[in-house]
Image 1 (cartoon, rainbow, N blue to C red):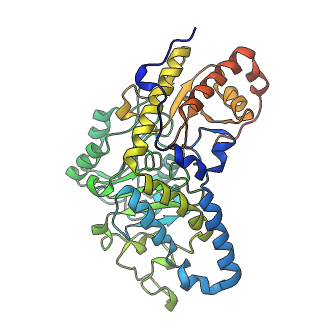
Image 2 (cartoon, rainbow, N blue to C red; image 1 turned 90 degrees about the vertical axis):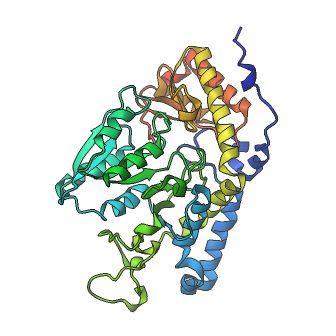
Image 3 (cartoon, helix red, strand yellow; image 1 turned 60 degrees about the horizontal axis):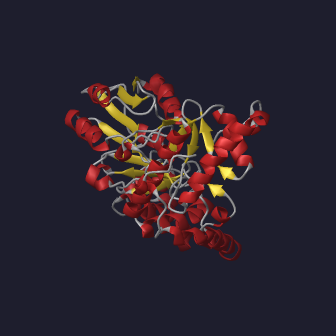
Length: 407
């Protein structure tokens, strides 16, 4: 007989359940992969239809009728979720590009050559800064140790007077460990370094207040917990830095007079626009608006309350099965994902997806389950029960040697 879950984790009436009707896929699947791609709101379909209609009927006139400012207007929708001033967030194609714009503001060959990161970062950003060694970057990657969190003492010690930039995640992508962002910002400010906080895995599920943190830069995307789809990443630059910084990775949207088509060196705008590059990805920005609006309407506090309860439920379910979890035992240090390290995790993940239990797998972490505000408690129970069935029946075996695309 299964051990009952703690009374505090028992299913209760969920005030956020009403939002399920906004997301068609959750009515057809057990969708537990919002850490990778948030469910599409039905409203996004109408927004994309509006984009098509605008292009079809207004043609090139659409630029002056709203398209040209959409990268900043959409950034303001992000700003309402993460508490950033209007005009301080611009939209870009992906976080790697947004991070490269930040890096291009620095001359690492001068007295501050050092960049401090942790080994739990998303590999794309590690790749970026490793390649920047040719531009003078001295990269120090702090080892995490236990595979879940970060040794904060070692990390803070690494941030010194030679450090120019600390690009670091608020929530680590493998383990969903929530770092102490304020401690990192405080130490960096004390030694004159800058922090670029990656909030991709926090914004939309863990409360973020960029103004209160005082962080210099932040990057993230609408793809995951903000339910905004691919191609809509964002870059925050603290407003008092707008006049000071001059990114080398730039383009005509950053020009003070872009339609003058001036030859020669760029004349930067003096606001957040100076961190834009070339022509924006208009359809992706249309697609992002609905999810950003919904998350902003629900509010971070309500989403976080449910997320903590459901992640705790997943931990309890996994422990009841005797499986390890790659997640912090402390709820406050746990983001929206719980990775369950069961046997044959990659094959189990594939078998679950074949059954419309939509999850993913990360080597070194396990099967990642990521409930969101539209997830019901019983769906967590059903997902873990399906994992047990897949293992007990050997259904995972047909997926052992299959090629998988890990997203």
